[in-house]
Length: 78
Image (tube, rainbow, N blue to C red; front, side, top):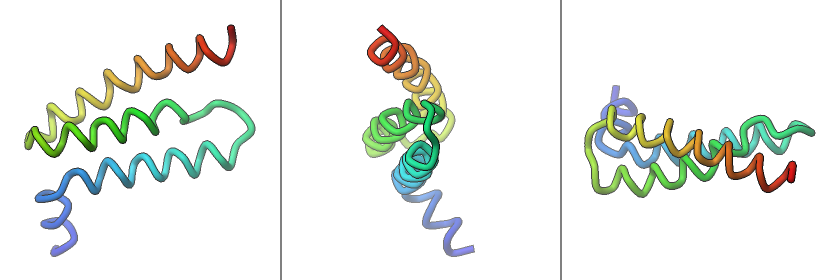
């Protein structure tokens, strides 16, 4: 339970973990599978330092992931 309390009080750690896991998944594959989650997670980590609401953070992560997907896809496949 202490880990859960730590995570609730420090949501930035969750977003760092999401970014690291996405990076590991991306490095273990040959295709662009999860690269857009890395910058989205890192930026959401910064947002979590200002905003306490997990719902707002999750929405920011979703929106940033979609934006990153379009930008990275345009850069790589253009």
